[in-house]
Length: 152
Ligand code: ZN
Image (cartoon, rainbow, N blue to C red):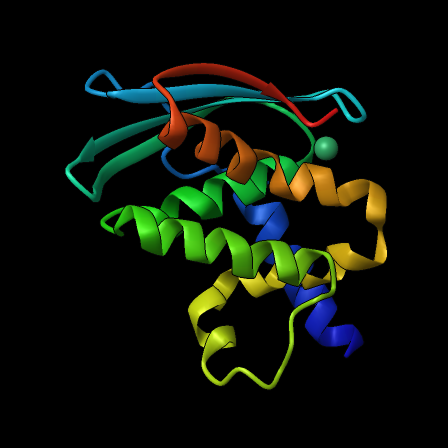
């Protein structure tokens, strides 16, 4: 288990050092800014949505390793997904980082995929907001055109 956790941490560190889709999106038709005052994480999430499909997604900002890696991996997971798939994945991800994920729903783990690396966050309640900031920001971006959200 210790080895597994180290591996997870490596993936998080790797994404925080070299975040994917880290840029402003010129063609974005949805965007929102999210702020986590507890840690100082601040990110903008950009989306190009066509109908129900997330054609492109990116982010910019600054924050701790967990918040940045989470944003990076979120953009990787959601590109090409539908909005309902994105919302479902957020639900699963939220359950994962708050330690509420259940094993009795077959396939849920496969759906969360690499995002399962954040399961360790559930042992550190103060970091849950770091891990979910990008996702809350995503939801704000999907729900409106221009928004600012705070985790407080
Ligand atoms: Zn943070």
